[in-house]
Image (tube, rainbow, N blue to C red):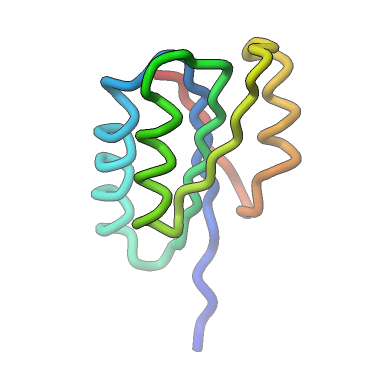
Length: 98
């Protein structure tokens, strides 16, 4: 059995309740066409006060690829990059902002 290569996708979020579900769905569609790869999707919330975190938690309950890190103190993008570097498990990672 051949082991699939793992790719980590990282998206920092701040008040993205209208975007996070669709963002995950689009990544999910991409990986359906890349059967040679597995993926983990790490969302790092940066202190959102809207429904971003509850939506991510609901998504993670039904999708084992989704991981959530919640930074309640809003350190900003430059500081949370340390969190994702410590969290990724993939051989490579892709990061994009919403």
